[in-house]
Image 1: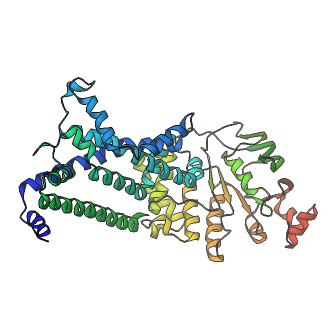
Image 2: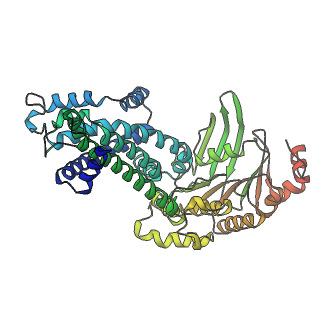
Length: 230
Length: 240
């Protein structure tokens, strides 16, 4: 039990190194979710409302990509951003930007696939009314995304869950550099392999607590706003 | 605002509609012009809803042609429809009407006042901020009417708007419909309620199994039905 108490001790003492790691982790995963939502939601809605050849293929691909192995995405982004890669000139490998790019790629399929399903279901319900009101294609997408907002929160949470839990991609493209690209998950992996179990456990506990808190906040705000507007 | 083209007269020429191999509507010839409400009457499955969807332009006939004010294939500009089970947008009552106004091209500045007017007209002013999906069935029908009226329609198509309502809610909806008719909007409404036909109709389109059985002024239809089905309906018998 001594491991537990020292893990809590680090948290309670407000260890600055620990809090820097927490801050970076949150910044990276939340930026990735925001970026992925900007790309994935309109794309998912578009996929839900349009019919074209190869659409089914695209739908299946996005569903499959929800399970994309993070290390593979990490490797792909690494190759893109490395000095000799096509985007090497940007010089952002081993920076938080690279980590955001990798995580965005991981989350876009989740948000797009869940958005597509949600919007498609809602469209079945709304089709006649919106057609009768003469709503154009762009306005349709906005309307459906807005009216599905409570369900889409679940898609965002799923994306956040994947981003905050993921080690492989951020490890490869971030490099786990102390004080710069070290996140909670990479730090837990490192400290565990170093045998520094109290710190690893402290970080693990903080990570779980944060994920819980964000989900609780999202749940609460959904319940509240549903009472207001749904 | 949109061009002041007219959707009247609404002309159906030898219109048939099939769902797969099943005929839904057969060889209908109808002219709908300005005037007192036209009620589409007939038993369930006689094709009332399908006819309204065709009139709205939501479905295309399998054969024959439909024109609105002489134009085929026109967008839903001067017409509006209230479905039997209208879908409430997941927004407030006022926002539902505001949305319909925006889609009808009403500029943002003019909307707030029009929303208030329309809600007043359907008696929902007190519920403006209520989530639309929390309304009762009768209130939802009235909100759907407000949304339809927001389009300033020439033709208002109604699909059994009082089918699931109690007498008080039915009265409220019928009052709105009559007021709309008096203001010059052509009402085309499906119903299978003899009393409602008496209260509202100017003329009657009587459909049986997808075919036009009778088209008459309401007095003629109720007093001198010329078909056995029409006779059974005006007597209050079950027409199947």
